[in-house]
Structures are given as structure tokens and as C-alpha cells.
Image (tube, rainbow, N blue to C red; front, side, top):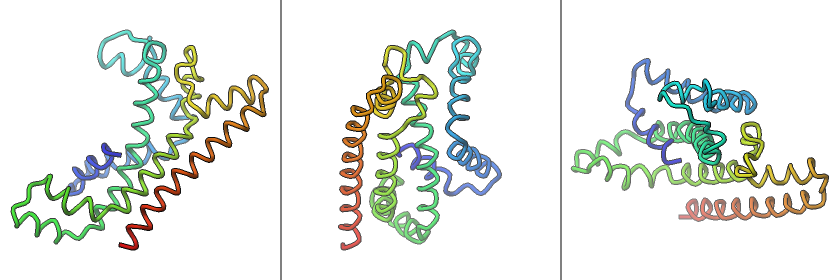
Length: 202
């Protein structure tokens, strides 16, 4: 979420073809199917001829030696794309006069962000936090990249449910864990909705 905001903030004043290229790449990163994304990341992190190894001239089996880090970077990449799109729309709706007034008053860039921008887009921040939290908690795409391995090092909760319910046939255990996950999701949603309601009332 932070990376998405920083990218949106830096791109807000760009009025050249480069901005359109960056925005197009971000949109593509978000809308392409998960199966295609997984295939691309497997090719990117491949230990023999992967793009990452070719760029740095190394021979590292990322998905074997650093599986969880690879999944974290992958999920950050996907979440950054969505956050940038959401915050980009929020910043475009922010009246330029607000920033200009604070700039004339001598506010630094950080002070403008802290005192003008963030309070103005608080609703977008809460919405983004809710969606990112739920999507991350229920993310299943890493299964297409690592299948929960090696040695269960990347077995997230959704993958754990899938493995028990369908690979081991423990449907009852899978259903029980899914129910707990649903309760946690509802709790997160209620907390964020309460924060949004308090903001609207204020």
C-alpha cells in the first residue's frame, strides 16, 4: 500500500507518454489472470535461465532457497499495482488549490502529504487497507508458483485448506479451517467498516 501511494504521488504531475506507459504496465500487472502471472513469475525466478538471474549474472534457485521471500515480493508487486491505481484516482480528485495553498504557506512536501493529502484521502486508505488485507489473507496464487513447497515453507492458510481437503481428503478439517478464516475476514471487514462509519459521522 505504501509503495502504491509513493508511485501514485510521484506520477501525479507527469504529463508525458512515460506516465501512460507506467500506468498501462500497472494495469496489466493487475488484470492479467493469476495463472498467467504465476507462469511469468516462475520464468522470472527460474534458477537456470530466469530473468532475475540473467539481470544480476547469478545462479540462484529463488523458489527453492528463498521461497517465502519470493512469495512476499510477488504479492507486494500485485498489491502495489492495485494500490497505485486506487491512490492515483484519489489524488486526481484532490483539489490542486489545497496543495498550492500549503506550498505557499511554506509547507514541505512531507508536511503537504501529512497535513493535506492523507486526511483528504483517508477513506481511500481505509478501503485499500480492507481490500489488501482480505486479498492477502485469502491469496491462493502462490500455490501455482510453489505448490506450498519446498517442505511446506510457503503453505499459506488457503493452500493448507486445499491440501487437507482435496489432497488428503480431510473435508471436515478443511471446512473447519475455512469457517475460521471466514470469521477472521468478517472481523477485519467490520473493523474497517466501523472506521469508515466513524469517519463519515465526523
